[in-house]
Structure formats: structure tokens, C-alpha cells
Amino acid sequence: MNFLRDPKRYFVLIQACLSFAANAEPAGSSVASPLPDLPLTTVSADSQTVKGRDGWYFLSTEIEHLLTAQNQIPQVADSEAVIEIRKYADALKAIGIKLVLMPIPEKSVIRMDGLVDATALPEANGYSRATRAYLNELTKNDIDVIDLYDKLSQSSDPIYCKTDSHFTPKTAARISGHIIKHIAERFPEVPIQSPSADTESQASVSQITIKGDLAGNEAEETLELHTAPKCATSVNQPGAITNSPILLMGDSHLLVYNQGDDMHATGAGIVDHLTPALGYSPDVISNKGDGIKAVRTKLYRDLKKNPDLLKDKKLIIWCFAARNFSQQQWNEVKLR
Image (cartoon, rainbow, N blue to C red):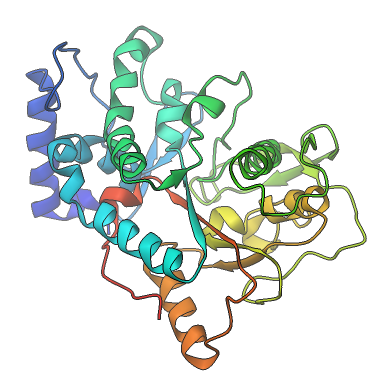
């Protein structure tokens, strides 16, 4: 839905902007810091894309998340997202599986320089407070989180594509390395063939040209493709459940550079880089447009058909765009 064409949601945005202008702070904060304006104008009347500075494009729903979630900070503990994630983690724990949450940071937070002038960047960092509140609350509730914010924001690389909503191929390799390190440090019961694997340096580099999902036909973009090294173990296709101890569950961030076509390439996605480092392929359940309800619904239905489907699983890593903390309906979906 385009929030600029929805009067109710647009009114919420106006209220949020007014509160920011008054330097409204989340509960418990003692220091007021102004938040700079963000561009709200979409590319066209039916577009869900905001055109930023210097050729950067952003999802309008992501901008809406930054603007509106700020007002939800005091109520994060009682939010549908936190409640449902806690329930799901408890249900998995009851059958001996640990849940790891890996929200993908907002492109507009990591590349805020594509939205605001350099002089406003220090204050613009305040827009990360909303998602940070969710992560802090989940961690407080013993939900294991792979926090990618500092890991990605401190890099000098672009991290994200200019014309696409996804991270670059190099970032996919980097995130895979963070996953391996996290598993090795936190879950010694999960086997890893190469716990110190450098997924970035082991990739072979070439170039691809893409037409991103945000810019459409307006612009092409050339990227470095970081292809994972070949290994004896084949990469599992999404939807197939094997005896792998790890299941990746989530949205298109698990498919980009793995599935080709509108996912741009093959052999260079997160699962492709994880497989040689682990020595086996994780299983993947993913949905391009919905890493929240659709993937849990599929797993629920699959478990109804085969109650022993997850008998070999030790870890489920749930990966979705962080904007979905506030921009997605968190309906209850039982594990079984």
C-alpha cells in the first residue's frame, strides 16, 4: 500500500513529523536531539519508491517505519511483534529448537546519506532508535539476536544497492560470516566445519549489472558479485526440509543472489556462503514478500503433514526486514 495515497496512514505520518519537530523523545530518554526531515515524495502516484540523493532509492514503507515506529517505542514490550516472537521462540524451545532472530537493518538507516544532507547525519542517527527498542526488548526476553546494525554501519562499503531494496552481494557474504561466528560462539552443539571461515575473502569476484526493484527501468547498476566457493555439498533449494540441523526462515533476503531472475544472480546468496563454511547446507523456507506470516504458515502446514519434520533441527534463524516490526501484521501463527 502506498501510504501517500492512504489518508489515515498519511495523517499518522504528519503527526509523527510534528512530534519530531518538537524533539519528542522516547520514554526514559533524558537528552533531546532533533530528527531531520526525511523525503516523503514517492517517484510517482502509484509508486512505493522514494527517490533520495545521488541516485539512491528507498522503499516508502521503510521511511514510514522510521517515522511512525518512533511513537511506538514506549509500547514496544506490548507490541504484536514482540509478543508473537516470544510465543514462537517458546514453542520451538518446547521441542528442543533454539530461535535466532536476524532482522536486516533498514537501508535508509545504514545509508541515511542517501536521504539527508551530510550536515544532518549526526541527528539522523536517531531514526535507528525505534528498531533498537525492539531488539533491546527481545534480548531482554532471552531472544537470541544477530545484531547487524553496528557490523554494517561501520563499513566503508556501500552495503546496499542504490537501485534495489536488498544489500549488495558482498554484504551477503559478510552477513554469512557473522552468522557462522554467532553460531560458533553461542551454539557449540551445532556442527561447523570451518568456524573461522572468512566468507568474504573466499568468494570469487566478478561483475553483474542489475535493474533494481526500486528504480525500475530508470537506472541500471553494476555490482561486484561475490560468488561462494564450490564445495562437495550441494545447496538446498528453498522449501526442501532435510536432516540439516539449521533452518533459515524469512523473506527475500534469503533468496537474493541465490535464485536468479529478479533475485539477480545464483551462487552468491547467504545460504550459498554458509554451505561451504558449515560443511552442509542449511534448509530454507522463504517468501519474497512476507517473511513474517507466510513462512510460519508454510511451516505449520508442513508440520501438520509430517509431525517429525523438524526432528533434526537444532537452530532456526529467522531473517526479515527490520521495517516489518511496525509495517507488518503480526497475526498469531502456531508452530503446530
